[in-house]
Picture 1 (cartoon, rainbow, N blue to C red):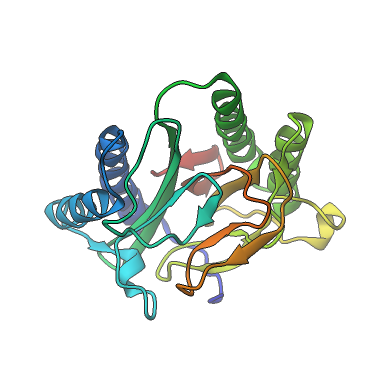
Picture 2: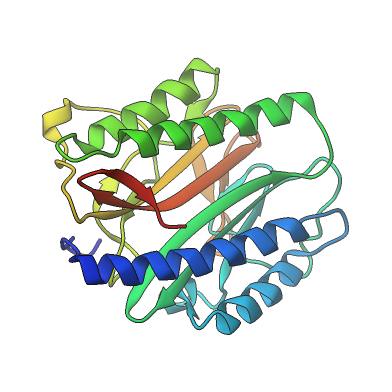
Length: 250
């Protein structure tokens, strides 16, 4: 990851505007998720909306990645390529991950949607939304990254699911991925992890699975899925750390 730098108020203001624009894009894309829609349909609309909002797709600035979104279904966790062959069907759990680059700064966000109704799957997704809310509330000046990880781990594990161990959230700003790394689980003491400071901007990601946390990479070189084929999900917001508490930018 790139080295983390504290953002000044003017930079946070730009990131807030980027996040606001990305939020609107995510909201419109999420409303499109339905039976018979393809991942490419979402991708094409994402590129259109990001451009019309005055930004550039952050993900297309990643080496060798040529799409504005990462779209995954069911056991797919992250980095799924949005192809026309990937057509959504009833019962699918679909995640959309995307970023927007605006006036020199990135924002990053994700959402997961269930097509149709399924009590078990809805409980699973509600757990992720709750974990993200708790994690964001834990991101306060003077605490540590451990506190964010602990919030995610506690909510997810208590519900009987598995936080992902192989992937992390991250700092964000002039680079899409900056330090610090923000795991979904804890493996050390709080003070062994970076202190949360005013002016930080971080992308908090809740990544978890119904089964084992073990993942594998597909032959396309990008898509990361659950090895056991169990359903996974991803929720993410870009958050600014202020002296008054965390502020969700996306």
